[in-house]
Image (cartoon, rainbow, N blue to C red; front, top):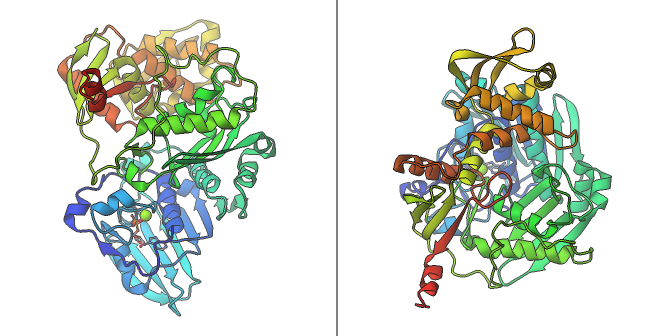
Length: 548
Ligand code: ADP
Ligand code: MG
């Protein structure tokens, strides 16, 4: 949505800035690219070009043909909490743009050398701005209408951050995934991606199916069927795969809430439920799904990278997505077994329109541990009601996310030398890179032995033998088409290391787990898609006491 040439960049008043879920926006090259693409889309660009060198560490450039930034406002674009997109706390409940915090450009400029070349349609001459080590210089320069942002020497002044990141190859891969995600969600916008001078994607404007064909391949695109479903305030559109086509990971599921790409366990489960019994286990449907609802029903301000949103009516959204998918799949033979996806039965979701919008903006309230039930469930209190958390599922999800997103190695007090059978040693040896990428320091130690010097931080304190046998179990179970090995190892290790049902937890441990879960990317489910918690809200409690 174009911010409009008339909306000036202004610094947010302190009370608004204070409401913003501030965080480390810039974690890696892909976060730079994401923020710059969002700015281009917000500026109404119809063509966006992304270019990077050496995984983005040396050089990232995002060029767009959007509105441009007027010269007199350009220095402000680099000020913290300066934005043309919102003005007040109330605006946070009506955000239609992808950006709104005014944080991205200053955060990038804090860890890199930034150059912005820009011109608006009203200006005859463009402007070049250089921001380096806190100094800003500007001069007139020739420029087409639009904006080109160049980011050089990312993390040059924060070498510790640089060290935690993966190889340039891996980071380029992440950038590619980020660009693909926007390209799939915005097929009407032309995208071009160049990596080290090589053209990786050239996508002219087209339909969603054209985009899917370009990015996922013609064959996959032909298997996609349209989704169109509308209820009072909710509209779900896009493409999903026929029940005959599944992939071995969820990497081919893209959800957009009011145009914003989000990750959400809730949406994944809602999409997958109607496929239960139709897809073999371990296969996941493909999807490009747009969920549109009034901005007041979505809290976009819950995640530092804006990668997650919170719905004020989770159940309605869940129900809507499932119905939309069911309707689209209705022409296909029904499943032979009734969907047994939810242990203990799927809660009946009422067909009701979305209720009250969020009154003003409230950040997600902290869950407070009240106690433990059956030594398996944590009972917690939130502003919305009573929360019952499955301690194993929750911990599993937290550990999984930490492992999967890459965690620093923690040295063992003394290195552990472990011996294996010849066959096991061979399996380990073959997957050493994958195992190391999770944060293990492991090396062959002669014969069939290996020495482990460090384990990923989330697993420190766990017996090393147990971790290695979990890895071996997964390697043994691995079918060649079973998808990303790293992800599966992270899942298996998370399951091994997570607290079990029956483990007593201290109040501090419960609180720490609740806090970690609230920070999670996808707190609704465990990595296998089982729910991690449910809420008994006031309405429900009152209904049970026949007060309603
Ligand atoms: P936000 O997007 O949250 O407003 P940013 O730091 O990303 O904050 O950008 C600050 C401001 O700079 C934006 O509000 C917008 O007015 C302007 N801006 C940034 N990038 C572009 C662009 N590519 N085209 C036009 N305006 C831009
Ligand atoms: Mg922005």
